[in-house]
Structures are given as C-alpha cells and as structure tokens.
Image (cartoon, rainbow, N blue to C red; front, side):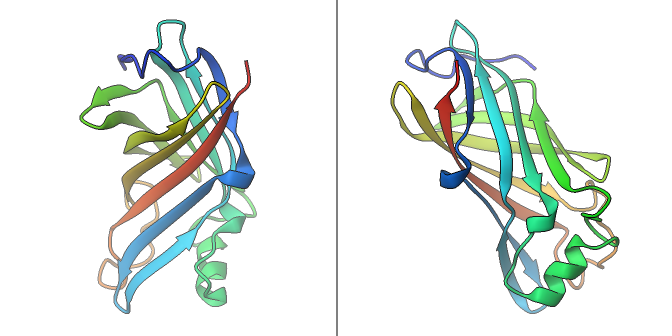
Length: 173
C-alpha cells in the first residue's frame, strides 16, 4: 500500500500505545436494539518514516476482555462459537501504511479473528498531538461474516458493526 505523508510535524520513529488512555468500542444493531461494548487494546504501534509517511500500523485486542455489560452474551461471544478466547486470546489488526483522505487518513488492513483475516478500512484522524504524544480516533466497519463470525443469523444481529478506536500513543524512538 502506498503511504502518504501523515503530517510534516509528526516526529519520525515508532509510536506505541498508552493503554491507560486508549479504548476500543463497538456498536452493532440487534433484534432488541443497539448493542454497545468494549474490547481492551493490549498493544498498538505506528511507524512514521523520516519523510513523514506512515509505515507499519498494528494493534492487538484482548478477546477475553469483550464486554457489553451482559454476562451471558459476553460469555457466549468469548466462547468457542465466536471468539474462542481460550484458544485464540487476541484479535489483531495490521496495515502497511495510510493514505491521506479528506480530514484524515484511510488505513486499509486486515483484522484477524481465529486465524481468519477480514479486510477492514479505518478512517483515522489525529485529535491531539505534541512532540511526545498523539491521540488518534479511528473508525471502521467490520463485516462479521468476513471475519468468520457467522453462527448468529443476520435476523438476530446485523452483519456489520462499527468499531471505534480512541488511541493514545507515545513516541518510543
């Protein structure tokens, strides 16, 4: 994927996650209305090249931390039918770079759930930044069928969900 300069003032090097200031949340329609929840972000990084372009982008989420506030549903999603968090404790996202778009960047990568890679495009924007820290909001739509999560019929829960990542990065060098 061709990288496009993120912003001349972004300090080159690797930027890593500050987990205490980062969240991954989602919303999906169900027969009963909207379901919202969170998944903890374990790690994430963005490499900024010397010319300001984005290099490798990655994130790892904790499948066992899936939480909607409904214990039975959460246990079902963490279980073998969906995430199988005992066997596959993480979900991962990786992209080769970012492309500038109106108001931010397009990040085209793959979300891996139980060894199934699903294409997910995130639209990202920097919400605050200084020389050592940067806050980024990235939003994308995940097709649960593409990710291999097909056990629940579309009548009960929508095929797609919206994933929002509010991530704080620190410059790591």
